[in-house]
Image (tube, rainbow, N blue to C red; front, side):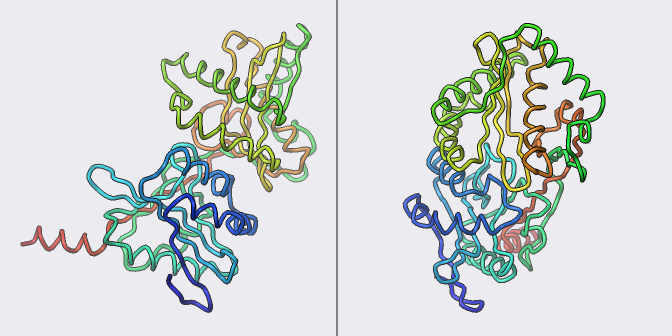
Length: 348
């Protein structure tokens, strides 16, 4: 345990049992972090650890008494013969980050970096990917390390103007017309409805989105993310927890008694996150993906959200709704001691 900085102290959590013991305090920290996303929630990352079973978890926790004021959910894994220190959540998360209480941000981050440097014998490279622009890591990287900061990807975001009351205030006219035409086509056949998963219907909705998303990717000859059994297991574990907290919105568009489209979203703080969707290609004339996404935007507007975050991926349909790119970043470095040793060896 490292003690410093006006009563703060750090511990390192290295197993799932120890993670379980800090979950309530972790949740409290998440609530206090304005820019935290669903991907830093304890429910999300605890499920990730259970399903993907990292060999070397390295979760740094900064405490002030019984309250957590900083948390870095890290792990160490091997890549091309090197030991990489990275953030947990890869493969299923669009944003990776630490959590720090703004009242103790400078002190908590300094202690996190100090502990990372003390563990330098256990890692060769730090590779922190998918960082949002708001990440405290970008503002306060550890001193005396040769950092490389680069734009990694982009998440298209549809920001709502103020005031905005209807879709016509937000969505470009052409896309609004496409949505209206699609809805009119489906209304003509009758017997269609939009549903949101309840605890009772969640398993069936999850089955539907796995099937629809996988079939859609199969049209392009690709397996899709749900081809990995660990990912399917992860979502079946985490979805009920997020639904119980009112965060998960799993939408389904039903026609002639069957789900023809499904959309997986999170409604969190001021943002609605579009995570993934799938639709029955046989119903493409009715643009089910457009219809279900239009409903999500309407709900977000009605509930006072300020934006739709389409998350990672620059698919063209996201921009048809008026989205604009917001970058994500990569922060990386090599172990300073090891870099010096290698340079000396080469010079010799």
